Length: 72
Ligand SMILES: [Zn+2]
Image 1 (cartoon, helix red, strand yellow):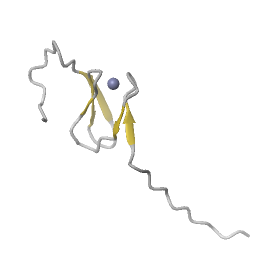
Image 2 (cartoon, rainbow, N blue to C red):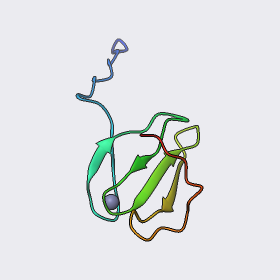
Image 3 (cartoon, rainbow, N blue to C red):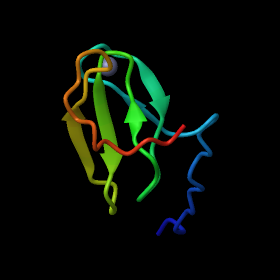
Image 4 (cartoon, rainbow, N blue to C red):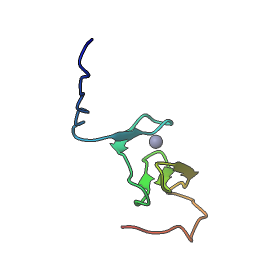
C-alpha cells in the first residue's frame, strides 16, 4: 500500500495571465474587483469577483461612453 504523497502547487512566475481572445495580447490576470484591463484592441476586461471576467468594447477613438470610469 503506497503512502499518500503530497504535491506542492507550483508557483507560477511571474503570475497568472489573461490573454485577450481578440488579439492574443497577454496581461497580468485581473484580481477580483480590480481595475479593468484595457486592451490595445479596444476591449475591456473587468473581474467582477469570483474570477468572473466581464468584457466590454470601448473604442478609444470615437467612443460614445463619456461616462466610462477613468483610472489613469
Ligand atoms: Zn485585445
